[in-house]
Structure formats: structure tokens, C-alpha cells
Length: 290
Image (cartoon, rainbow, N blue to C red; front, side, top):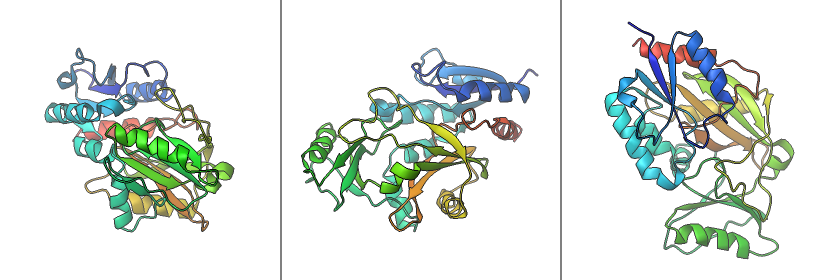
């Protein structure tokens, strides 16, 4: 038998620009795998002819969310998909945060708005407005309310008028000073942490591109951050996922709160943190052998 074929799902615009892909390619090939890199919506991609499909930088799915979920379902019917199709559908809509909060996970307080509803804003000096289906900080904006609510209401209204669900959250002041911490897990085990510098500026969308540029540095996670990450991942049913990223920030009381749980297409920042991708490659090989 030849080398197992691992297909890495990306997006056409990202091919050649994902800094982690060369690191992952090297690790997979060193582990004895053949790697194929295809855009998820490439009609010529032969997903059933591979041994495993690994979702990575599929960041253009947002305006085609249902099509992306349907693609994941089709692939998973024929080929092992990681992370699984059920996780794809659940985790690409940020309503999952409400479920985690109901289970006792500390999240950033969130006001949920659905198309047709009256716009409600939290009592806060600043807020972040974003759609519940988003990637790479697309369509995410920061607004000061002390100067007036018009911009925040306008941003929410534009999304709602487009038929998109919206979340409004108080902007956490600590993000400006400390940034956010991302905790990366591979096969259920903590692997490394990174610090992400703040990217939201009042009055401007985070990005007009497919994803917002990010300033990433390696860091050491605190015990409280690790505890929150473990609590969060414990709410995800099933065996350990191949990869996961838990993004946290410091809340008003000094304790960490969950910003996002990234289980589908998160940057894992191996390259930025000087980390090899060997553990992820080994986890892929482990699944190939099952």
C-alpha cells in the first residue's frame, strides 16, 4: 500500500498565504502521509479518494454557510472528516456560546438579536457588534456608546436587514492592555498558548479582507485560563477532537471569560509560536490507523 492521503481543506484565496500550512505539510510528510491541498468548494477535488480530510483555512465559507455545512456532510459520508461534520454545523454559528453559558461556562455577556427583533444594546461604554456566523473578524465592529448609539445600532441593523443573526457584547477593556489568549489543544491535550494583540478600533470594521491580520506571540497560559479552557472543552460531547482552540480574555472582575471556542478552521499559529506541528500530524496518523 502507498502512503495514506491526507487532504487539507482550505479556500482558494488563502492557498499560499496560510503560514501554518508549510509547517503542517512538513510534519504530515515526515509522518509518512501524502498531502493534497484543495479549496473546499473546488469541484475537481476528489475527497472520496483520500484517507482523511483535515479542515484548516476554509475562511471564505461565511456567506455560504449552509453550503459549507452541506459540503462537510457530503465529505463525512465518504471519508473521515476532522473535525467532524456535526461539529462544523454547531461551531460555525456562535449561538453555541449561549449553550456553553447555560452549562456554566463564563462567557463575555452577550445580547442576541434575530432578524425582525427590536435592537437592544447592553449597558456598556463600548460594545462589539458581529454576526453569529463569521470568521476572521469579518463584519465585526467596535462602537462607543457614550458618544451615541447610532453607529452600533446602524451596524446591527445592517446585519439584521441582511437576514443575519447578531451578537452584541460589551468591549472588554483588558483586551486593549493584555490582548486575548488562545489555548491550542491537539487530540484533547493542551499543546501551546499564544497572545493575540487587540485588532478592533472604534468606527472601523476589523477587516475588509477575508480575515483580519493578527499580531501573534507565544505566551504561557495561566492556571485560570487553562481551567476555563478545560471546562469549556468538557462540554463538547464525544471523544477528544483532533484540534481545538479556546480564546479567552480577562473579564471586568479579573477572571478569564470565554471569547470563542474554535473547532473548525482556527489558526493554530505553530509558525508564529515557533512550535512544530508534529503532535497534530501524529494525531492524524493515529486516526488513520483506527
